[in-house]
Length: 293
Picture 1 (cartoon, rainbow, N blue to C red):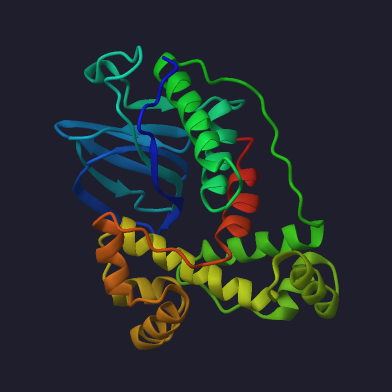
Picture 2 (cartoon, rainbow, N blue to C red):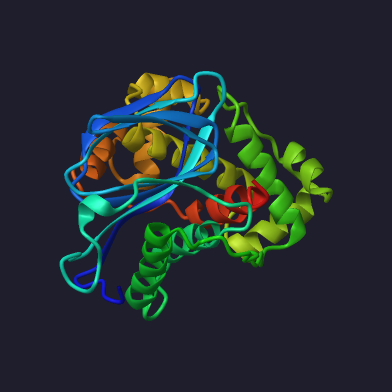
């Protein structure tokens, strides 16, 4: 099993759902790796229904119709990415024999590779496609053979003050609805002055803390647009916008399309990018923060 012929990575990211949200039913045309980081789901893959608590890794495959009913009491957060390849090439087992569900070990290779794949997908690094194919191939082989229980630690390359500010933003985004964030509150969480925090953000992320918080709010909304059945108004409320009009205006200024058009395009397989906060906010905070789960 050393070939992923015609490999192609699709959409990838982090999604957060308010309690009681649903997604699907949806017919999958490609593969999807999905890791439930916090919360839980009641899942249905074709006629097979099962529970998926935090720490569950799921593998959807072409032709499956899936549906998710997210935790009714707590927020659910997950990491996901889509991919396709010619699985008739190489020594892959028959598709019907592939598992669809595994429970991630406390020290698990998949945890680090989820972070790696989603982060690399947002970059323009040389040999990106080759690296992604190798990483996803390793994930797939270890998932199929149930041999992913390995300890790998993440490398965090942002200053501690930025990490703490990002954690405060993530904490705010976890609440329903999302509360307003002030520069003073972020600086207090980071244990530095507001002026120093602004300088750090400008130096390392090329944006201010409040700009980062605003983009993070929109990125959560983008995930809900693609991966939930919530209405535009419900999403605007969930991420803390005063009105659907204000939300749509801010969303269009970053993504270049309306929330409704974004939902249609992404669900139809057309990738739309443009939010510069994705990699730092999503990968350095939520995935690293859950490595002890």
